[in-house]
Length: 313
Image (cartoon, rainbow, N blue to C red; front, side):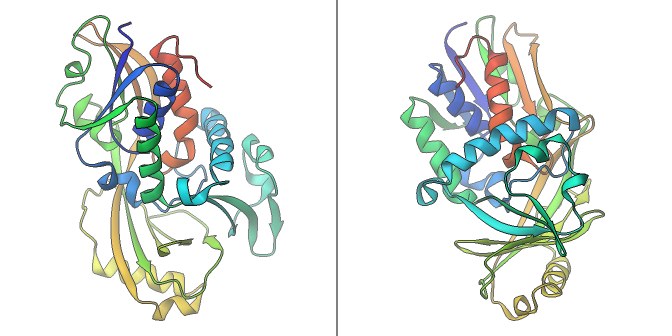
Protein backbone atom coordinates (compact mmCIF):
# COMPACT_ATOMS: atom_id res chain seq x y z
CA UNK A 1 0.00 0.00 0.00
CA UNK A 2 1.11 3.57 -0.66
CA UNK A 3 0.24 4.71 2.88
CA UNK A 4 -2.36 7.15 1.55
CA UNK A 5 -6.10 6.62 1.72
CA UNK A 6 -8.82 8.73 0.15
CA UNK A 7 -12.13 8.68 2.02
CA UNK A 8 -15.04 9.78 -0.17
CA UNK A 9 -17.83 11.35 1.88
CA UNK A 10 -17.70 14.11 4.49
CA UNK A 11 -20.53 13.05 6.80
CA UNK A 12 -20.13 11.36 10.17
CA UNK A 13 -19.20 8.00 8.61
CA UNK A 14 -16.50 9.51 6.41
CA UNK A 15 -15.02 11.74 9.08
CA UNK A 16 -14.99 9.04 11.75
CA UNK A 17 -13.32 6.65 9.30
CA UNK A 18 -10.81 9.33 8.38
CA UNK A 19 -10.00 9.97 12.03
CA UNK A 20 -9.44 6.27 12.78
CA UNK A 21 -7.15 5.89 9.77
CA UNK A 22 -5.20 9.10 10.36
CA UNK A 23 -4.67 8.32 14.04
CA UNK A 24 -3.44 4.87 12.99
CA UNK A 25 -0.69 6.41 10.87
CA UNK A 26 -2.24 6.62 7.43
CA UNK A 27 -2.08 9.71 5.24
CA UNK A 28 -5.74 10.60 4.78
CA UNK A 29 -7.64 12.87 2.45
CA UNK A 30 -11.41 13.19 2.80
CA UNK A 31 -13.13 14.19 -0.43
CA UNK A 32 -16.58 15.64 0.09
CA UNK A 33 -19.01 16.97 -2.51
CA UNK A 34 -20.34 19.59 -0.12
CA UNK A 35 -18.98 21.23 3.03
CA UNK A 36 -19.07 19.03 6.12
CA UNK A 37 -21.63 21.28 7.80
CA UNK A 38 -24.04 20.79 4.87
CA UNK A 39 -24.02 16.99 4.74
CA UNK A 40 -27.03 14.88 5.73
CA UNK A 41 -25.28 14.17 9.04
CA UNK A 42 -25.46 17.85 9.94
CA UNK A 43 -29.27 17.83 10.16
CA UNK A 44 -29.55 14.68 12.26
CA UNK A 45 -31.36 14.71 15.62
CA UNK A 46 -29.06 12.88 16.77
CA UNK A 47 -29.77 10.34 19.52
CA UNK A 48 -27.69 7.18 19.83
CA UNK A 49 -30.03 4.27 19.13
CA UNK A 50 -30.01 1.46 16.52
CA UNK A 51 -32.88 2.75 14.36
CA UNK A 52 -33.81 1.56 10.86
CA UNK A 53 -30.57 -0.27 10.21
CA UNK A 54 -29.63 -3.80 9.19
CA UNK A 55 -28.21 -6.45 9.42
CA UNK A 56 -29.33 -7.03 13.00
CA UNK A 57 -26.60 -9.58 13.72
CA UNK A 58 -23.88 -6.96 13.16
CA UNK A 59 -25.52 -3.70 14.18
CA UNK A 60 -25.41 -4.41 17.91
CA UNK A 61 -21.63 -4.71 18.09
CA UNK A 62 -21.06 -1.64 15.91
CA UNK A 63 -23.50 0.35 18.04
CA UNK A 64 -21.97 -0.65 21.37
CA UNK A 65 -18.46 0.08 20.12
CA UNK A 66 -19.63 3.54 19.10
CA UNK A 67 -21.46 4.01 22.41
CA UNK A 68 -18.21 3.55 24.32
CA UNK A 69 -16.60 6.28 22.23
CA UNK A 70 -19.50 8.68 22.81
CA UNK A 71 -19.43 8.02 26.55
CA UNK A 72 -15.82 9.21 26.59
CA UNK A 73 -16.53 12.20 24.35
CA UNK A 74 -19.40 13.24 26.65
CA UNK A 75 -16.80 14.25 29.26
CA UNK A 76 -16.13 17.40 27.19
CA UNK A 77 -19.49 18.28 25.59
CA UNK A 78 -18.53 21.85 24.67
CA UNK A 79 -15.71 20.51 22.52
CA UNK A 80 -17.32 17.35 21.11
CA UNK A 81 -21.03 18.16 21.05
CA UNK A 82 -21.81 14.91 22.88
CA UNK A 83 -23.93 14.88 26.05
CA UNK A 84 -25.49 12.06 28.05
CA UNK A 85 -29.20 12.87 28.43
CA UNK A 86 -32.08 10.97 29.99
CA UNK A 87 -35.33 10.17 28.27
CA UNK A 88 -38.05 7.67 27.43
CA UNK A 89 -38.41 5.26 24.52
CA UNK A 90 -42.17 4.60 24.47
CA UNK A 91 -43.46 1.22 23.38
CA UNK A 92 -40.12 -0.42 24.12
CA UNK A 93 -39.02 -2.77 26.88
CA UNK A 94 -35.64 -4.03 28.01
CA UNK A 95 -36.68 -7.58 27.15
CA UNK A 96 -37.55 -6.52 23.62
CA UNK A 97 -34.04 -5.36 22.78
CA UNK A 98 -31.33 -7.41 21.14
CA UNK A 99 -28.30 -8.73 22.99
CA UNK A 100 -26.73 -5.27 22.71
CA UNK A 101 -29.21 -3.97 25.30
CA UNK A 102 -27.25 -5.71 28.05
CA UNK A 103 -24.28 -3.48 27.19
CA UNK A 104 -26.17 -0.23 27.83
CA UNK A 105 -25.97 0.78 31.47
CA UNK A 106 -29.05 1.97 33.35
CA UNK A 107 -31.81 0.79 31.02
CA UNK A 108 -35.03 0.18 32.94
CA UNK A 109 -38.69 -0.33 32.22
CA UNK A 110 -41.15 2.30 33.42
CA UNK A 111 -44.84 3.05 33.03
CA UNK A 112 -44.08 5.34 30.08
CA UNK A 113 -41.69 2.96 28.34
CA UNK A 114 -38.00 2.24 28.43
CA UNK A 115 -36.02 4.82 30.40
CA UNK A 116 -32.40 5.41 29.41
CA UNK A 117 -29.52 7.85 29.56
CA UNK A 118 -28.03 7.98 26.06
CA UNK A 119 -25.65 10.08 23.99
CA UNK A 120 -27.41 13.03 22.38
CA UNK A 121 -25.22 14.80 19.87
CA UNK A 122 -25.15 18.37 18.59
CA UNK A 123 -24.04 17.48 15.08
CA UNK A 124 -22.84 20.94 14.06
CA UNK A 125 -20.38 20.92 16.96
CA UNK A 126 -19.57 17.24 16.54
CA UNK A 127 -18.77 17.42 12.84
CA UNK A 128 -16.48 20.38 13.51
CA UNK A 129 -14.79 18.37 16.27
CA UNK A 130 -14.26 15.41 13.94
CA UNK A 131 -12.81 17.60 11.22
CA UNK A 132 -10.43 19.30 13.66
CA UNK A 133 -9.41 15.94 15.12
CA UNK A 134 -8.73 14.61 11.62
CA UNK A 135 -6.63 17.65 10.77
CA UNK A 136 -4.71 17.38 14.05
CA UNK A 137 -3.76 13.83 12.99
CA UNK A 138 -2.47 15.11 9.64
CA UNK A 139 -5.56 14.48 7.51
CA UNK A 140 -7.18 17.00 5.18
CA UNK A 141 -10.71 17.66 3.94
CA UNK A 142 -11.08 18.67 0.31
CA UNK A 143 -14.17 19.78 -1.63
CA UNK A 144 -14.32 17.48 -4.63
CA UNK A 145 -17.11 15.88 -6.62
CA UNK A 146 -16.29 12.27 -7.50
CA UNK A 147 -18.00 10.52 -10.42
CA UNK A 148 -16.03 7.25 -10.28
CA UNK A 149 -14.40 5.50 -7.33
CA UNK A 150 -11.44 4.85 -9.61
CA UNK A 151 -10.65 8.57 -9.48
CA UNK A 152 -9.64 8.12 -5.84
CA UNK A 153 -7.90 4.76 -6.39
CA UNK A 154 -6.61 4.90 -9.98
CA UNK A 155 -4.26 1.90 -9.81
CA UNK A 156 -2.85 -0.91 -7.71
CA UNK A 157 -1.44 0.48 -4.47
CA UNK A 158 -4.16 3.13 -4.08
CA UNK A 159 -6.99 2.81 -1.59
CA UNK A 160 -10.39 4.50 -1.35
CA UNK A 161 -13.03 4.16 1.36
CA UNK A 162 -16.54 4.76 0.07
CA UNK A 163 -18.60 6.58 2.74
CA UNK A 164 -20.92 8.37 0.33
CA UNK A 165 -24.23 7.39 1.92
CA UNK A 166 -27.10 8.17 -0.42
CA UNK A 167 -24.57 9.06 -3.12
CA UNK A 168 -23.54 5.41 -3.39
CA UNK A 169 -26.68 4.76 -5.43
CA UNK A 170 -25.12 6.48 -8.46
CA UNK A 171 -21.42 6.31 -7.59
CA UNK A 172 -21.03 2.54 -7.10
CA UNK A 173 -23.68 2.23 -8.63
CA UNK A 174 -25.91 0.41 -6.13
CA UNK A 175 -29.61 0.34 -7.01
CA UNK A 176 -30.36 -1.05 -3.53
CA UNK A 177 -29.64 2.32 -1.93
CA UNK A 178 -32.91 4.08 -1.14
CA UNK A 179 -33.83 7.40 0.40
CA UNK A 180 -35.90 7.46 3.57
CA UNK A 181 -36.89 11.09 3.94
CA UNK A 182 -36.79 12.62 7.40
CA UNK A 183 -38.25 16.04 8.17
CA UNK A 184 -37.63 17.93 11.42
CA UNK A 185 -38.73 21.17 13.02
CA UNK A 186 -36.47 23.07 15.43
CA UNK A 187 -38.26 25.31 17.94
CA UNK A 188 -37.26 27.38 20.93
CA UNK A 189 -37.13 25.02 23.85
CA UNK A 190 -40.06 25.78 26.21
CA UNK A 191 -38.31 23.97 29.07
CA UNK A 192 -38.06 20.34 27.91
CA UNK A 193 -35.01 18.70 29.50
CA UNK A 194 -35.45 15.04 28.48
CA UNK A 195 -35.71 13.43 25.07
CA UNK A 196 -38.72 11.37 24.06
CA UNK A 197 -39.26 8.84 21.29
CA UNK A 198 -42.76 7.51 20.65
CA UNK A 199 -43.55 4.06 19.30
CA UNK A 200 -41.98 3.87 15.85
CA UNK A 201 -43.47 2.39 12.71
CA UNK A 202 -44.99 3.75 9.52
CA UNK A 203 -44.01 7.00 7.86
CA UNK A 204 -44.91 9.27 10.79
CA UNK A 205 -43.52 9.26 14.32
CA UNK A 206 -43.13 11.54 17.31
CA UNK A 207 -39.90 12.41 19.05
CA UNK A 208 -38.12 15.43 20.48
CA UNK A 209 -34.53 16.04 21.46
CA UNK A 210 -33.38 18.98 23.63
CA UNK A 211 -30.27 20.38 21.98
CA UNK A 212 -28.28 23.43 23.11
CA UNK A 213 -29.62 25.40 20.12
CA UNK A 214 -33.30 24.44 20.56
CA UNK A 215 -35.75 21.58 20.74
CA UNK A 216 -35.63 19.26 17.70
CA UNK A 217 -39.08 17.87 16.81
CA UNK A 218 -39.70 14.90 14.56
CA UNK A 219 -40.44 13.20 12.49
CA UNK A 220 -41.01 11.26 9.30
CA UNK A 221 -39.65 8.17 7.57
CA UNK A 222 -40.93 8.48 4.00
CA UNK A 223 -39.46 5.68 1.92
CA UNK A 224 -38.29 6.42 -1.64
CA UNK A 225 -39.10 10.11 -1.17
CA UNK A 226 -36.25 12.23 -2.51
CA UNK A 227 -37.74 15.67 -1.81
CA UNK A 228 -35.27 17.88 0.04
CA UNK A 229 -37.50 20.91 0.58
CA UNK A 230 -39.53 21.10 3.82
CA UNK A 231 -43.25 20.39 3.44
CA UNK A 232 -45.33 22.89 5.48
CA UNK A 233 -48.15 20.40 6.03
CA UNK A 234 -45.70 17.78 7.28
CA UNK A 235 -44.14 20.36 9.60
CA UNK A 236 -47.52 21.20 11.11
CA UNK A 237 -48.19 17.51 11.70
CA UNK A 238 -44.85 17.11 13.46
CA UNK A 239 -45.55 19.99 15.83
CA UNK A 240 -49.06 18.70 16.55
CA UNK A 241 -47.84 15.18 17.37
CA UNK A 242 -45.11 16.46 19.67
CA UNK A 243 -47.56 18.84 21.36
CA UNK A 244 -49.74 15.82 22.09
CA UNK A 245 -46.95 14.65 24.40
CA UNK A 246 -45.74 18.05 25.65
CA UNK A 247 -48.49 20.67 25.14
CA UNK A 248 -46.11 23.60 25.67
CA UNK A 249 -44.46 22.75 22.34
CA UNK A 250 -47.52 24.05 20.48
CA UNK A 251 -46.69 27.68 21.24
CA UNK A 252 -42.92 27.47 20.75
CA UNK A 253 -41.38 29.74 18.13
CA UNK A 254 -40.12 27.87 15.08
CA UNK A 255 -36.42 28.42 14.45
CA UNK A 256 -35.69 26.13 11.54
CA UNK A 257 -37.02 23.44 9.22
CA UNK A 258 -34.78 20.54 8.22
CA UNK A 259 -34.88 17.68 5.74
CA UNK A 260 -32.43 14.79 5.48
CA UNK A 261 -32.39 11.69 3.29
CA UNK A 262 -31.44 8.64 5.34
CA UNK A 263 -29.28 6.32 3.23
CA UNK A 264 -31.11 3.00 3.56
CA UNK A 265 -30.01 -0.04 1.57
CA UNK A 266 -31.64 -3.31 0.63
CA UNK A 267 -29.63 -5.90 2.53
CA UNK A 268 -28.42 -3.38 5.08
CA UNK A 269 -25.00 -1.83 5.62
CA UNK A 270 -22.35 -2.65 3.03
CA UNK A 271 -19.01 -2.94 4.81
CA UNK A 272 -16.58 -4.92 2.69
CA UNK A 273 -13.56 -4.63 0.41
CA UNK A 274 -13.57 -4.81 -3.38
CA UNK A 275 -10.91 -4.67 -6.10
CA UNK A 276 -11.83 -1.94 -8.58
CA UNK A 277 -11.46 -2.22 -12.35
CA UNK A 278 -8.67 0.35 -12.01
CA UNK A 279 -6.72 -2.06 -9.81
CA UNK A 280 -7.21 0.10 -6.73
CA UNK A 281 -8.58 -1.26 -3.45
CA UNK A 282 -11.99 -0.01 -2.32
CA UNK A 283 -13.58 -0.46 1.09
CA UNK A 284 -17.30 0.24 1.10
CA UNK A 285 -18.88 1.71 4.26
CA UNK A 286 -22.39 2.87 3.44
CA UNK A 287 -26.08 2.03 3.81
CA UNK A 288 -26.40 3.01 7.47
CA UNK A 289 -30.08 3.94 7.23
CA UNK A 290 -31.30 5.91 10.25
CA UNK A 291 -28.35 5.03 12.49
CA UNK A 292 -25.26 6.52 10.87
CA UNK A 293 -24.31 8.33 14.07
CA UNK A 294 -25.11 5.27 16.18
CA UNK A 295 -22.71 2.94 14.35
CA UNK A 296 -20.17 5.49 13.10
CA UNK A 297 -17.17 4.42 15.18
CA UNK A 298 -17.81 0.69 15.07
CA UNK A 299 -18.09 0.80 11.28
CA UNK A 300 -15.11 3.16 10.98
CA UNK A 301 -12.87 0.75 12.86
CA UNK A 302 -14.02 -2.20 10.78
CA UNK A 303 -13.44 -0.18 7.59
CA UNK A 304 -9.93 0.67 8.80
CA UNK A 305 -9.20 -3.00 9.36
CA UNK A 306 -10.34 -3.73 5.82
CA UNK A 307 -8.07 -1.02 4.45
CA UNK A 308 -5.25 -3.33 5.53
CA UNK A 309 -2.86 -3.33 8.41
CA UNK A 310 -4.20 -0.27 10.23
CA UNK A 311 -3.24 -0.29 13.90
CA UNK A 312 -6.77 0.47 15.04
CA UNK A 313 -7.31 1.53 18.61
